[in-house]
Length: 528
Image 1 (tube, helix red, strand yellow):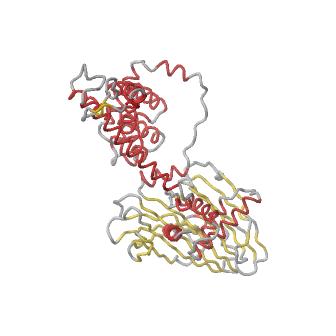
Image 2: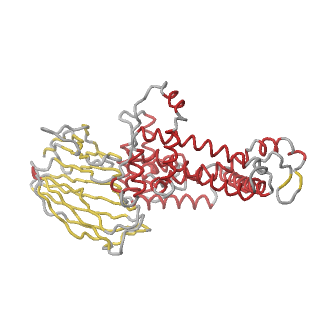
Image 3: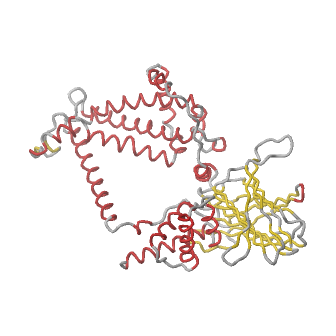
């Protein structure tokens, strides 16, 4: 390996550790998250892969070293990207010819973009457009700008409608009033179908007219300089790219279609809230109401309706934290140390911010069962580089709410000392609780999901010499359901005891992207 690649690999190890720290994930947590991604009945190949990843994680996280096995280091980076939902500089693993190829591809794309702009704009200004004989030059330029603008709104609104159709925007009514008003009209399947049909008709008309403007049947010389094309370009270039309008199609595609679609994909609410989009949707619905799209509707009915595809929990999390709430939990962890007649519970919840403007958040995910000492609370902020800035965020107030069956709900109000939290800030809330005389009381715990959460983690370390360690049960309840009698769990899992790398018996459970208003209840049976 050359020096630059060595340095990039070291930087990659550093970046991974920084991101794990910012996500409050230590080595044991990472191994637990990796183990949770194993199939229930892994093959020998999958087990070998997992063991190699554990070995790599020791090198990267524990020792901050570049592993020797590059193949499994690459797999480790891919797994880490999936767990954290971020991207690292994994190009360092690419073949040595990959980077030059990417550079050549980017240079070619840049040259092509400039060349197309030159031919299309120059051809229009030289009066070579197909419409030049019927429309003045100023009219052609104005028409092209208007068509591209309208096309951009139609294409971007399509992406916004598709992404937001099944979303709940009630909490964003004041922030995105126009998007909220439009959403009520297309949130139904029928409203979306009518919009898409009318929109497609409008797009076809716009593209057809734009194609007339950006095709040049008599252009045979370079624009502005009046130098003929080389003889070897006379047939294929003028016919395919100028008369048939392929260069013009690329021009319209890049500016009027791809760019707005990609913008709307990243910012669907902001795009839909743009003032002109309201009229674009109204135009689409108007054209649909004329009946011009009915034949397409009739043909589509020949295909039988299939079941809907649910939105992934990862996408729900992303939309909630980035577009709706502005922050969310990276992970909720409850780590137990069970001993004869005593126990310690360490609770940790890390909240990451994605929007500017919040200076106070409510931490209300902590529920504790049994008689305990008041939890020792610590709260701190990590900003930019993950060096904890203690006292930058403090617990403004802690409230205890007594519930039935010896449950206590702890609610914290966390406020920043440096004004609003910034995008990328992570606020970590920690609670340590001691229990005494726990032989018959500590056998149940729960995690309640009240906000977008990336993962939940239960881990129970069983210390000393227990006589018996039973199988633990995880029951999952939906809190937004109404029960006449005893609630019924939506899922039930059996969790069997195992031993960690130090030989200590543990019980462990991990779930990624749990649904909001879900409660995970764990029950265990340990006898000393």
